[in-house]
Length: 443
Ligand code: GDP
Ligand code: IMO
Ligand code: MG
Image (cartoon, rainbow, N blue to C red; front, side, top):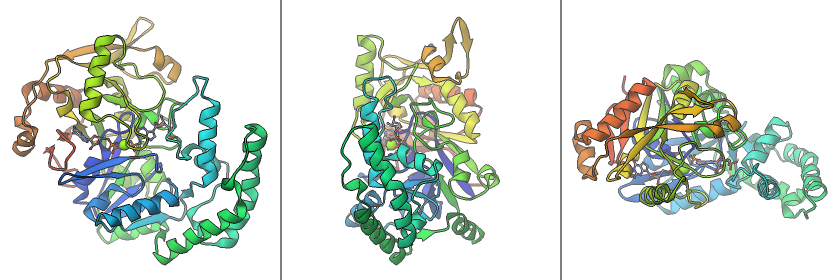
């Protein structure tokens, strides 16, 4: 049995919380794309963990795998593992030998390119973790893979080819000075040592084989998506995207199981009850038109703690966007959804949803394929009755029927529009602050 968790919107939908919730029934939790640009929060008994690379199953002692579709910065991985050990966890993390390695020059180039774009509308607002440049090298067939770290000769050969090109890019194209990120000898030494640690701790695996063996032995696998559908490189708001496929297809190509394996399991879209976006790009339902909108956005931002987990940036806030969710449900083939942050919308004096878009006088229910056209869309808003602040802990304990009526109407509208059932409703950040409806691991 597999369950794939996918961000339906722009990232930070609360994927970590649901991976943690249902991860209790998983044996292995596998990340299939992205790297330490992710920040997934798990709150267990008031203790908060913010995970960037270690799969969120770690809090429940599950085996974590970083699939071949991931880009891995070993420096941040090891520091995260060490931090978690200091907090009493013992994360068992395996790395796909086919996954690509984020090298120091990737991170430098990510920041240099953002800086170069700073005065244009091409700025993406990346997390600065070197994600884009690493995937570029992967596609350009000049990347360093985890498997290469295990073989010093191969590592040296690859670095001797690629590093002079990065140095030339930094110096000749951008007119800057290359530093230690382009020192081949220092890189060979540091990354050979990292390879030694990977070997010593038996962390590098053939991901597809590893998962096949574990599935044959009866293990349940959870695929933990990072980021979200609208920042997917193919299905998102290009170029304001990350460089991987957070949508469900990525779970197959990013781990080495067949698409039929992913498709025979459950694919659960994680939906935030409103929208948040960190970084640039259109957002038709953004709350920014007047002082009242801004006040509302500030209120939601503060109440929902909407500040980037990785970079601390304040997130932009908007109403739920249904054309976006219809797109997400189709691209990933959701079998169900989980709706988070219902508590954050409680007590507002208005609650709206972008039901459709208006574009050149036409009303449309889905998103246009180009980002420029998407940016021209005006939301057609639908207003809902508001719901009051209630004792959400009690609601989580009592179940769905205890959710205020107006909020139930909101949830039912969502489920009807997307034609999928709701499996869980988040009413707070903690594991126990969830209204359980159905566990996707149950038959
Ligand atoms: P992820 O990247 O999708 O895993 O999400 P993040 O962890 O970056 O951001 C979600 C934030 O909302 C975290 O601070 C969570 O602890 C918190 N959170 C998750 N679910 C809920 C919920 O239902 N209600 C509230 N108030 N907070 C939630
Ligand atoms: P999780 O997994 C929200 C955004 C960045 C930027 C764009 C590209 O926590 O939901 P990148 O560094 O990936 O090249 O940046 O994508 N972004 C995220 N936004 N949540 C994330 O991850 C994100 N990861 C990247 O802000 O706009
Ligand atoms: Mg996050």
